[in-house]
Image (cartoon, rainbow, N blue to C red; front, side, top):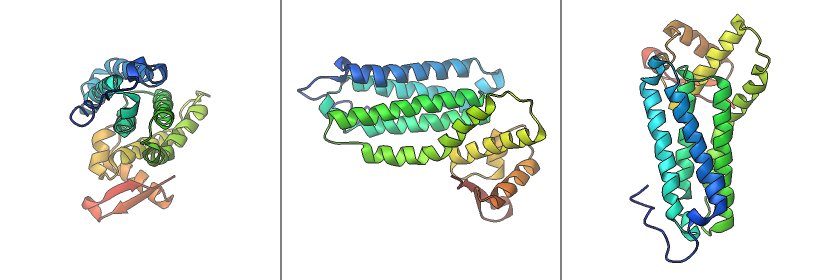
Length: 237
């Protein structure tokens, strides 16, 4: 980020630090997201807090905020050439949050709040870019948001379904396990059974294998390779 974009301040034009739309809709909202990420990571159980996934999430959130802050020095004219970099950081931040959820770092309700807030920032980025620059990130925005929409929609459905606070049954536990496997496959793109059990530590390899077999039959997962060399990808909508 610093090497490729932060020197493009522009000799003329209003800098983003003076732009109320960018400051409130993008910088301050990103700041709130990062503060919430830091809080939820440091309030998690010690085993989760000390995990590689938690440390990676915390560091990436701070890096995303830093990139958003560095853009305050840019002019409106220069913004379009680097907007896609910030959009990519936000999309990856969401993926890291999903992985953090799969290791028990937070409740699904918290994940869905983060997903909705990140989506708001991405939309603000697109709108600001279209209104203020000639070089638009609209095509990149479509590509990234259409990809993440496939797994955002089910997450939003789980929020409304979870409001009832019904006691868990075996069926509900199976659904939760499937959601966690799905989150790992989306984050990793391709994963072996060992990759999955390294993240979902409260399920045995046989349990994961049975669930993956069911998901393959349901048309949600694609398996490549044979036996211990098999990898799995999520292909559901």
